[in-house]
Image (tube, rainbow, N blue to C red; front, side, top):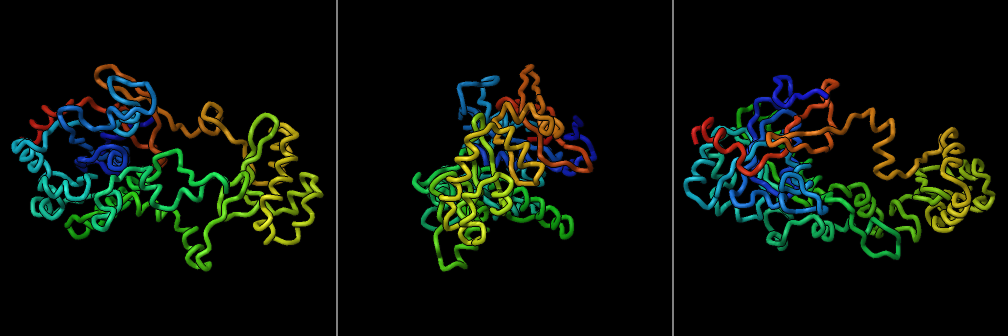
Length: 389
C-alpha cells in the first residue's frame, strides 16, 4: 500500500479542513477529503467528543471508542474545544481564518447561535468553502425534526422500493442517507475549490439527507412522474427491483443463493430447459405483468440443484447471474483480494484497527493514511501552538 496522505502528490495535499460535524454524514465527507490528502482537524467537545465514539454497532470497542467511530474518523486530528467557552470559540474563529474548508451538520439554527454560520465566517475568510449538511434543508415544516438516517429514509419514500409486496416498508440495512450526503458534500466542496482556484472566492455548499435520497431515486421517480403517477409495484416474491421484470431477483439453490439480472426469457427457457416458460416468452410485457408466476417457475427449478451447477450452466452462456456472497466468502475471493481494499491503521498508543481503504484511485494509486482515529484532543496542544490559538 502507498501512503500518500502527507505526500505532495496527493490531490488535496496542503488543504486544511475543519470538521465541526459528528455522527456519520459530515465525518464521512471529511474522511474522503482526508483520503485524498487534505489535513482534517476534527473539532470535538472535551467531555466525550463526537457522539459516535459511543454509538456501538456491536459490543466491540477499540481503545475506548466504537468501531463505527474508528471506521469513519481514521487519519484525522482532534482538537478539543468547548464552543460555549468564549476563549475556545475565539480560538476556533482564529483557526477558521487559516482554513480552506469547513464542514458542519448541526441542526438548522444552532450554527447561527454559535456565530459560525457561513454569512459570518465569509467575512472572516472570503476564501473559505463552507459545507453544511442538514436533515431536510434549511427551512420548511421538517426543518427542526431530527436529521437521522432511518427517519430520513422513512420520509423519502425509498422504503417502498425494498422487500416483497406484502412486507410493508423495508429500510436499507445501511445508513445510506448519511453516506450519500457526505459523498454529495464532497462533490460540492471539490467543485467550489475548483471555482476558488479560478476566482479566488470561496462558497457555500449545502445538501441534506432528504435531498440525496430523492436524488438516489431519480431513475424510478422520473418513471413515476411521467407514467401517469403510477406507484411502483414490488413483486410478491423475490423482489429485487420494483420496476424490473422477471427474472430479476434472488433464487435459492440447494446450497446457496443465485442472483439473476436482466435476461431475455426465451434464452433462459432454452438454457435452463424450462418449457413451462413458453406461454410468456413471446410477450415481453408479460415478463412484468406476470413476473410472480414466471419467478415461481424459475425458483422451483433452481431449488433442485446446487449453486455451482447453475453457475457452470449459466455463466458460459453469458446469462447475467452471480453467487450471493456473505462477507467471509467475499473477503476470501481472489477478485476482492486483488482490489487491495483492506488496511490496518495504527495510533500512538499502539492501537491497531483493521478497516477498509478509499474506493478511489488517482494515477493508479489508492491514496490514504495509516493513521487511526484520534483520541479526544490528542492534537490540541500541537494545533494550538502551530496556529497560535
